[in-house]
Length: 195
Image (cartoon, rainbow, N blue to C red; front, side):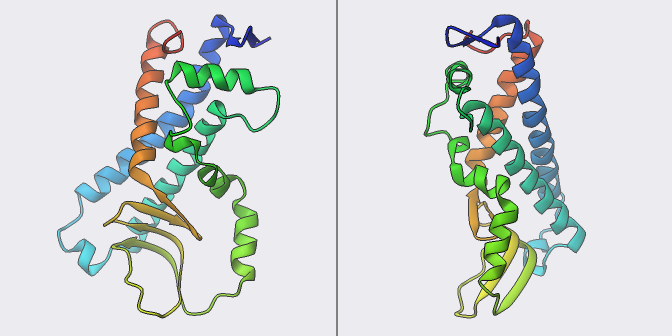
C-alpha cells in the first residue's frame, strides 16, 4: 500500500524521490554537457558548421533530456488508472499544475511512441533535402522541401525530433528545479517537498 488517503505513505516517499532523482540527474548531466559544448565552441562554429561528432553528441543529449523529462512527467501524470492519487500527491508536493512544460502529451508521445511516429513519417514519402542531424540556426524556408530527422535550432532554442518541435528552455528550467528539490529532499530525511 503505497498511497494512504490520497497521500504517499511517508516511509515510501524515499523510493519516489530516488526514482525521480535518477531521471532528473541524468537529464541534468546532459544539460551540463550541452552547456559546456556551446561554451567551448569557436566563434566561427555556428557560421561554418559544427563537427559531425559534436552535432551527434549534442542531439543525443537533447534527446536524453526529452526522454527523462517524459519519465518525470509520468510520475506527475500517470498513464494508467489507479495511480491518480500518487500523481496528485507528487504534483502538490512539487507545486506543479497543467501549465508545467512537463505536462505536454506531445513531449511524452514524442518518445513513448517514437517507433510508430517514425513509421508514419517515412510512409509519407520523403522528397527534397534530407538532413539526418543538424545543429545551427533555423533554416530559412526557400520552397525546397526539407526533412530534418533530429535538429537543434540554436537561434530559437528548439529541438526537432521528426516533425515535433520542443522548446527546450522551459523543459530544462523545470527539470533543474525538480532536480534541486529532489536533491534537497534526499539530503534532508527523504521526505517530499511540502510534505
